[in-house]
Length: 455
Image (spheres, rainbow, N blue to C red):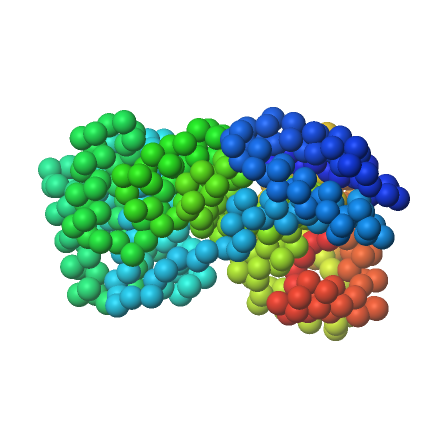
C-alpha cells in the first residue's frame, strides 16, 4: 500500500534534507510536489487543500526558517499533519459493556465484509482473548451464510446458524440471546451488502441497528475505490451511527487515497485495515505507523508486535538453546525460519514494514517474493532427514535426486545451499558474539533470545 505515494514523497523530501536553509520559495516548490503526489494518490481534493494550507502555515513560521536543520523540520511537519489527517492514534474497539458486546458490520457489496467478520473474530480471540460468536443476517446473497460458517470453522469462532427464510432482525436477536446463554464475550453480526442509494435496504439496516443497538457499528470499505470510499462512507454515516471503519484490500492499493481521505470526510476513525486474503491479515490502524511507512521510514513496531503474536516462540527458544550448546544451524532450522516468515504475512508484508525499503528498486523487491519461499521449502522437503541434518553430504547424485523430487533444476538446489551456507555463517557469528540476544533486545525485548527471525 502507498507505493506510488511513498516514491513521490520520499524523493521530494529527500531533496529537502540537504538544504542548509529553507526559504518561502523552495518550501513552495516542495509543497507543490507534495500536493501533486497526494492528488495522484487519489486523495480527496478538499483533504489535499486543507493539508497543504496547514503545512504551509507551519512551514513559513519561525520553527522551520530558524531551525538548524530546516529540511528535517519540514519533514516533521509533513509527518505530523499526515498523522492528524488520519487521526492522532489508533482507536480501539469499545467492548466496555456487560457481555455480549455486539458488533454490527455494514458495507457495500463486494467490499470484503464477510471475510472481515472472520478476520475480526480471529483478532479478538488471539489479541483480546475474547470468546466470539458470528452470525449472518445476509439473507440475499447466495451462499453468504455458508461462507461465514466455513470461515467461522477456520478461525474457531462459534457460528450461529441461520437461513434465508428468516428476517435479519430475528436472526440477530436470536444470536445475541444464545450468546448470553453461552456466556460469549462478543457477537459479530454480518449484514447484507447494500448501496447507499437503495432506500429499501438502507431502511432495513436502520431497523436492524435499532433492534440490536450494537456497541460498535463498523463500516467495511474497499480501499481500491480511492476517494469514492470516503464519499460512500460519508453517505452511510448519515444513515447509520458508524463508530469506525475497516479499510479492506490495502495490499492491492498502491495509492492510499482512501486512508488519507476517509477520516477527514466522515469524521470517523479507521480502526482496522485488511492487508491480505488470509484470516490472519488484519491489523489495527495506527496513523503514526502508516505515515512512517508512507515517508519510507518503515514500521518496525508493528513488525515486532506481529512477530510477538504470530511466531512460534517455543521453536525460537529451542533454536537459541541449540545454538548455545554448539549444535549447528541445519536445513530443518532453515525450513522453520521460512515457515515463520510465511506466518508473519510473507516477505511482501515484512518488507513493507522495514525502514529504507522505498529506496530499493521495484524490480529487486519483486525478486524477493512469497513464491520463492515456497520454492525453497519444496526443495528442503525433497531431501531426506539425514540430508537436512547434514547438508555437507549433499553432492552430485543427491542434488540430482532432490531436484527431480521437487520438479526443479540442480541450479535451484545449488542456490538454496548457497543461501543456507550464508545463513549458517551469520547464525554462527551472531551466536559467538551474543548477537542473537542483542538483536532481540534491539527489537524491544518482546520475545526470547533466538527469536526466529531469518535475517
